[in-house]
Image 1 (cartoon, rainbow, N blue to C red):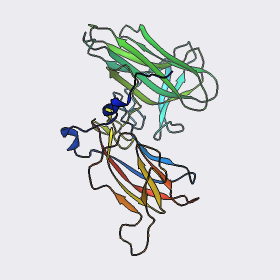
Image 2 (image 1 turned 135 degrees about the vertical axis):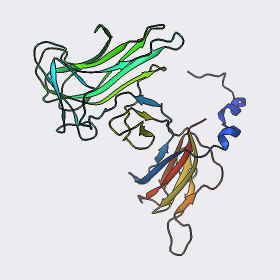
Image 3 (image 1 turned 90 degrees about the horizontal axis):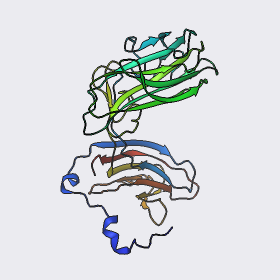
Image 4 (image 1 turned 135 degrees about the horizontal axis):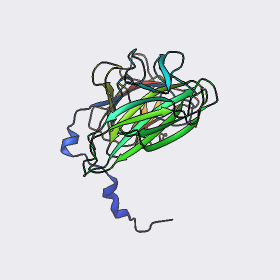
Length: 316
């Protein structure tokens, strides 16, 4: 449906002028790249702005990399660290249900400060699970300190690939502090071993699931203390592109906030002997782009390799 109330004189809202504060902000975000165009004559993004959400992981050994697994508590099962299967890192938690009843597995605990009566707080629990065989099942849920279920997440049929489990519980306003258990357990009674990895517990105000976080994931991720023995965090990424430095093996067209072509792109020539700065482009003046950096080969059928870095900031 066409909205005819949108008129050309709204153009000012289409443009973004950085504030004095953000225009002088140091470049605090960077994205190193090295890639080759996949299909010649087809434009490709080398960088897309995606600020994302900040996240905190309260699980201190989320990849089960450390030998100390005391933060994980068995429930009707035997648990151990295992290096035979992993969704990330080198290990996962092996859970061996006792086959005595449904609801056998493992749990972690989170103690909350209670609902503050102003902003709703949501307790999130996440993990990935894989079966030792393609039978049996697993689910995730949250119980309170009385072991009463307050939230139930998804249930999966176990397979020989890791699957995502997620659950959330909105803590009511003015709720007293409590200790909650995030359980990953069998849905029906069975004795199929399963592996659990990428544990992520978090309390959030936005009600969204945070991205899985551990301090060894690279840019924007860090541990609060010792690796695999402390909480971890994920910082936000760039909201604005403020600069680029690029080297190319062949001539290309480079574009910002649109799809690169011979008519929209900045031409970057190929490297040439005894020609300074050929095959190279660097912004040495203020820029502010909010969508993407795109490139395409300038000579038909070539597949250039490019490398360099995009600089940005995290504030709008």
